[in-house]
Length: 242
Image (cartoon, rainbow, N blue to C red; front, side, top):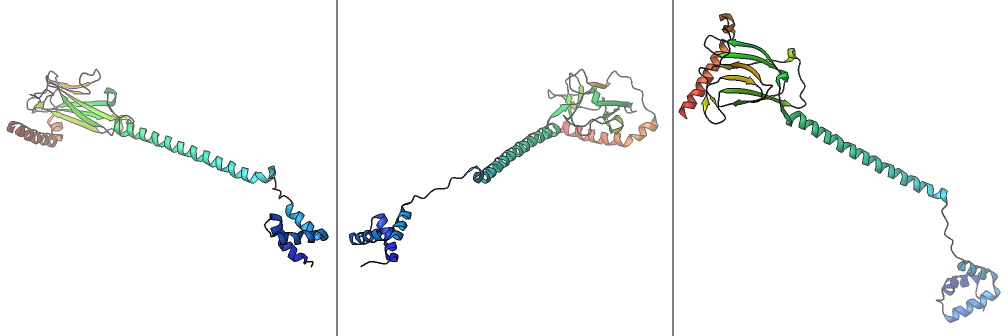
């Protein structure tokens, strides 16, 4: 009995893979001898599957994506490096602007005038050519007093007319200063600058002859003198209690 081609083609995959029974195998072989259509069907199953070879044109989209990704990575790297450089420069600027402190020299200070009042005290007016600065005081054993001004390294220097006037009031007959060796001494000289510096500005010393100001000028500073006297009296009181 000859089976229809549809049934044979259903068996051909099993026959092709060698997993059909001997009976089915014999039936298929007998059918293939007289059926060219089913024989062609079997040959088609034997044909190798060809894997298409991607040419240069087909690979271009992938190459474009890769090239774009590489450029993005380089760009991100440059941005990161630039950001780190900016951070380092900013930190350096802050350090020199706020933390790096240097002493002010004679070229940074202007002595305006020296006053001697009727009670024997002296008032030294001067200008600091830097707005942001700190002060320190050093008292030597011989009574020399050094007012040291310090400023940030990158602080902008002012013009003389931009700087405010400052003053130091000193009374050599009354004032007591605690020296660096722990003893109280009377002032003998007053400087602006670092102790032992050649650029220190001498404002006053005990041998300096400064004439007494007029009553009118002294009256302008009377409130300041009275305030200074009260503060000095309080300091002296606390010193004697110790």
